[in-house]
Image (cartoon, rainbow, N blue to C red; front, side, top):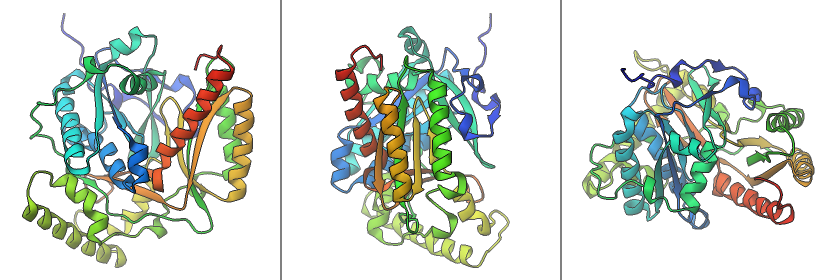
Length: 401
């Protein structure tokens, strides 16, 4: 009997229009049994961020996603970016490509940034055999970007397996040939974005199973946050009118080092000069609303503002949003009550600006942007969440977190 081709599974899923319905399990479908979950995590990312390497952490964390998307139909691979790592789900036909890309990211991260990247590729059947699942849906983040959202606990299990247990079974050999890995489109050329009279909050919220139905807990969180913040254009941390590009070599160094790894000084210098010219031309084209046969530069900044992942759901709620100090106090009061009722654990990191790491497949509409809070964003929020999680586990050992 011929094997069913599951490679187009994700691209055929219906699209969810509202982010505030992402916790509803009715919209999700289980990842095919023959698929794999690739997961990465940067070792000691907190220490790296304390040493002002947050941009490098984000570049390395995002690199496997664009490496694999460059080898696939971009609508067929669900993924999620977590600041210091990522998860990517893919069919068996892409297994060797994934091994190559993950190994290349690890090799470049260590060589160029002195950052160690843990990597693992875990079969879906192994995740399910341990009582977890990966269910996925598509959320319409913008007219040009459908974003994957996940439930089922499988991604959280994969991340914990990578960090806390022996991952040898799922590791990728260090001697694998990585020359074919292609990271074209991985860019980091925008200045940090700071909203006027507001702060940027990197926020992680995880419902605790067993106390109350998880979907109901998230619905209550969504309702409260909508009342406090309003959402949509009011909370997007990268409004189009605030976007400005970098020209300084020091600010472009992360992209230059990653994209020219192993190519020598002259290649590195040539790449730097090339992207500086592209940035200058981009500034001019956007300033004067230039329209070419391939690109309408009037739309680039508005599309960048829309085609981003500042709202995510992958076994927990991940947000990078803007707000006032009063809004933050209201949110923290609400979440602390939920925490004391053993319904959620959470972490929040406050910063002045957001940072952008880009995947650019084409300048006209086909570009996706990963958002994190400056100076540690998701990583520092995760540290706070883990502290609260440890407190709950100590005080309430009956909870199955």
